[in-house]
Length: 112
Image (cartoon, rainbow, N blue to C red; front, side, top):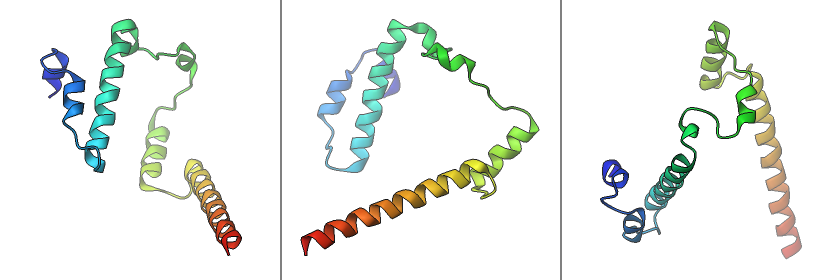
């Protein structure tokens, strides 16, 4: 459908109207369709955004590169617990799970 949407043979609203959004798959497709339509508008108004950050402040972000960066990325993809980002993510997940458990338990206690 990509080419048909790109050249205007079919409008995104036409496709959206035929979707049964009760299921997860069609809802995901609708989100992708909406983003595609949104970003087409962004590109039309700001063609520079195809190659550069929309927000120029992001141009100054430092990016790691080289062998060490490749090794760290591979370790992160594997879920290596020694990677700092993995440690932080696990701690945050544990905090959120604990908080959720406390909130749910609190609701149960009040309802008794």
